[in-house]
Image (cartoon, rainbow, N blue to C red; front, side, top):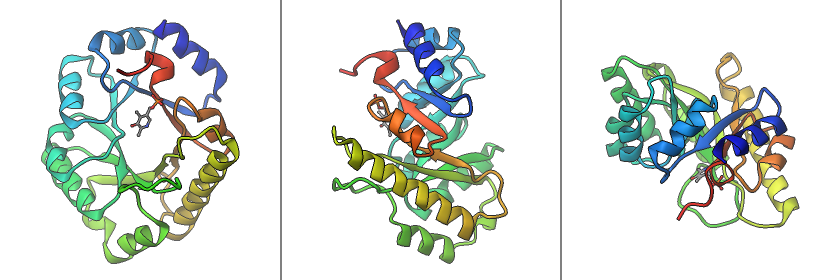
Length: 220
Ligand SMILES: *Cc1c(COP(=O)(O)O)cnc(C)c1O
């Protein structure tokens, strides 16, 4: 069933949109089933779970940390993680640089923006992001590469609302690209869209979707 679900999604989305298969809470056997169907990019939201799975599973898997991450947990995933999606303070960038350097690696990251109407502790506003980039010199942290933006829409059936929030993230991406990353080709990722809303997200410019339950079934 995992194989069928994966190929249904792959057939439905444009080739240039990257699919992150969100395997959080799911057993390694589920990941292997998706792996055998050709999937190589998996998303986790807990540092220790990512570490354990990365150690046990094939080395050509690209691991993405998609959830909120505390600075003191970065060291557990630094040897394995390809991309960290939810950067919302500069302190995290400093720590990721430090741990990535220790491991002789460059870790890609995305800036998480708060686009939903729902109250949330997480995610940057545009002002905060501007301030963060004005006050710090990214070239001091060469083992971190900022590759784009990430966001989550409100969990609602109201399609217009979800669409408006994704449009906002696309505008934020364009603004950041023009004002801070104009000369950086790597700044090209818009990570938005989950099981319930990835079709809308792609229509609004998503380049990377994070899909869990539509592939692996509901989480308990
Ligand atoms: C769990 C999670 C997803 C996947 O959610 P589904 O609705 O199961 O597709 C995507 N993004 C983030 C940040 C998540 O935590």
